[in-house]
Length: 474
Image 1 (cartoon, rainbow, N blue to C red):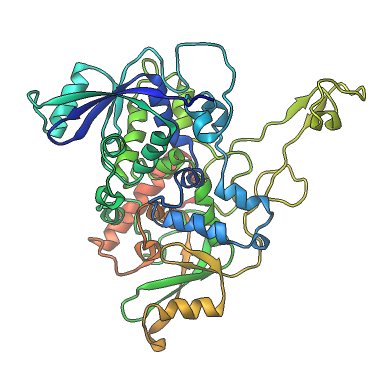
Image 2 (image 1 turned 180 degrees about the vertical axis):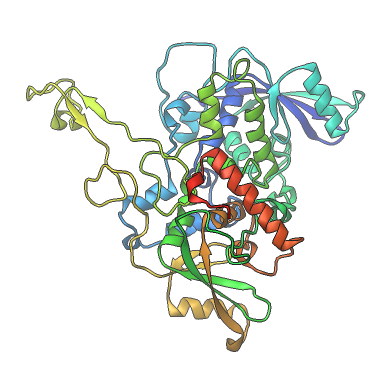
């Protein structure tokens, strides 16, 4: 079968060998926007284990290494490593879907519009993935932002985009400030284009550094979990956390989150510039002139989890798509045998999907991925493994510390901590210290934290992440 290719026009600053912007029709833009519907686990699986998603990649590898007997059901491992998208029906019509996801396209009536955006519009895409309808005003504004004059020497490159280049772009959008240039003009070392301000962004953003024990603030959610931090007594450096199944289950659930849902939780500020730009571009695109419909815009900005992929330990209340029942015009035996007609005379039968997280035939949502009771350790960069004395001694020995300089600290994890953990897992290799260390240099810590809590609560209530009656502002 012939490989599918898409056309893309690049405008390149010749002196800098950098893409200033690209021009495209709806097919390339649809594929670009569809990245927000992809769950994190799927992205890591598509881009390979070399993915630079910081501690999130360590979570993925932890699931790979996990004994299946520690999971509620054997299917749980596949659900975390290859999570489904709730938008997969819509994405079947993407031009690159069959080459990337190996799924056949959905047969639909011919039309000029794309999957998410209108087909009669030419779009501009900046190097850092701002997307907008092409116009003179947009081009001049972009030139001004980049400090480029009209007398700059430009080259026009017409390229044919393959599935391999789409996957490169998907990978680079998660760590590079210039993903178009990196994908189409030069193969740079990944570290050279990484956003080195990511950790500073975590520390300074309203969602970073939540410390639930610091101020004695009122509980903002009825659901909380307790973990034990093992740390250095002298400088409070956290080595690892010791915990039951609920905390690792929360962390593993991050792999099922679509990118768009993560950006929604973080208020559009993930600390990854190109990803944030892409999300904001969709917010700014006009639903009447650019987007195919308001429903398409919602699918990208607030994507749901696929049916049964939610965990009872998730905390962030990202909504799950309701499972669909199917009416089949034949009995179950003939349906499983792919017979066109029922040979047993049965007119129809209603088929109810079952929740793979349960070993039995359960149709209700909910459940967890991990089996209770089990004790786990979670390292600073989110390697998760079952507790063992040998593993703990080996880990502590690697820090070259003395035994009397080790202490335990109990902390609670609620919504604010979950948001901070989610953000840090994308951009940091020291997640536990970034979120729970009491020594982090936040200016005016007490007043800052109270403002942060109030701001986050109001945003969460407004977005439907929290319910107002769960929080008492006393």
